[in-house]
Length: 374
Ligand code: TRP
Image (cartoon, rainbow, N blue to C red):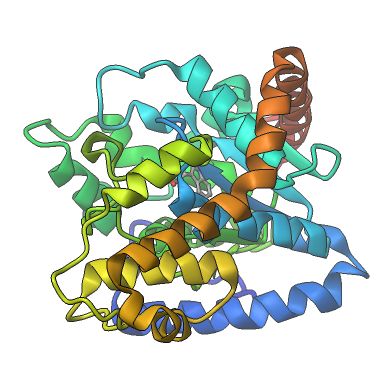
């Protein structure tokens, strides 16, 4: 599973593979195999399956986050993986001037994590800004990458083009290296991510390899982590376009049942009465069927067959019930937890303390192998 260190340096022409179809297919295949291995190995050696993933605290989590990622984190935690979740506050400033209400956003994330079933006894929840050693680990890592390699990163390029006329900031260019520190500081082996994050994983793997070969004489200080891709299809907003807070087409986890119903009532469908599942020809109807299917654990086409002549109205009722029934427990737990902000702060304080302890230990190792313990 792990590639051994070779003479692979940033100064050579080795490049980080772009996220092409073949790379994606291979990553998806590896993800399936890993998922099976977790069951087998967790019993013997849980640290083998340390898992880290994270979110940017830019606003509330929506059903897309829940279906594609949050549910899966809880599932892996419950399988026995030791879980780390980074609230990536320094990534908020990669492409915008203002951070927004970071305090509220961070608290909102923790509430959703806990309500979804992440258990602070088994999962370390922490923020970038509370772990100074992450920034320091980034320095040797930066020495292992070239600016050409960073400029080629497809995700960074996309983010730059989405940020309009903004020039490329040093932080946007280098945040994949900071993200490598997120992943490597705790020796995470598994990183559940969406497809857009694969270039960062490749970059992280290259940094781990190069660190071992350049600074550690080939010893494995850092193991190469693996991406664990979810298999949830890309979900659209209720208007059939990309989900975005600014478009008002999002159903947030914290929304009430009534707000959810109102949002789905306004969802765009099409003029054909009979409901069918045809993602290419009828993307909006297909999207609603997909959302209901994911919540109900059913295939979208079987739901389409059931709704059939009931039309858009029956479809919307089905989706509303699926979302509201499935999230009722989550929302109730979230509300209870929100009444106890001191507890939420305590979870974060303990998570930050644990992340600091591990990060400082890793930094001490890094200094030692680099001959920098004076
Ligand atoms: N870049 C990720 C996102 O935008 C968030 C993130 C930060 C992350 N650090 C991470 C994801 C480490 C996985 C591993 O969603």
